[in-house]
Image 1 (cartoon, helix red, strand yellow):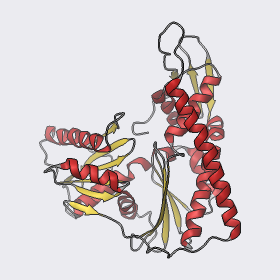
Image 2: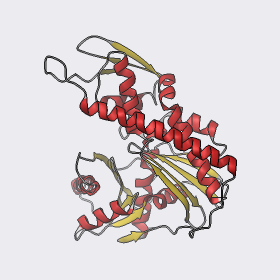
Image 3: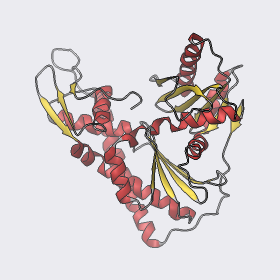
Length: 351
């Protein structure tokens, strides 16, 4: 790999794009520059990706440096196609996201040399679980759920605050959740009424419990389907910054845990490494051939049915809360409710 080549790594998702500018031999160090571009309501995933690229190219220009390569990770073929169509004459390497994650974990020495690994990627828009072979970078099985994710947990948190008389919006509830990753207690204040709600990590754990337990069943299902016992499980995505989620998963799933201190940047950092190795084109992972999975025993089928029931109930609850957010009546005086004031340390960027 060339040293000191300036590269741009971008991770694209349903919630927006993360981008980081760094040198090819330093993807594990704090980036030269980075940005997060949320996805605009009604906008395509490619919109946030190209805005992030534009911002980072501008940052490189102010340093009078040239970006030698750009790689964008995508979770699904539809996102990849949209980005490819919008790229025009830009020379991009479009990478399947789990491949970038495996590449960075291998670079940092966290990935087992042999066997397989579970990639547990919990972001704002949902949960993706991928069972991958570490030696061949083959996907053995992969599943996606939009029921479990940061947006759903934020909706539950807003419901919990509303019960205490504190009305808040989505960005504020997200900051509450992120701050509970760093501190054990956060106080939310309704600045109109003076009502207060004290939130603790235990409160958040109670709200997240059903989803975390279901996701553990999800992991066990994938292992049963492939018939391959993984060597470890890597926790990825911004939501796994929460000590509550990490501790609960470690207790529920009997696997060694791999955790990078900045789990939401693993994909972008892997993209940087792949941008240095290949300039342009698509990088996709091979799949295990159809029908090469084992059949789960009857007892596991019963667990799976129970997990599906939990998913349906949890999904209905979160969908109802999100619908309530959109259709909530306005105060009688016609003004919008003020976001709750947060009394806690400043949250991390990229939380």
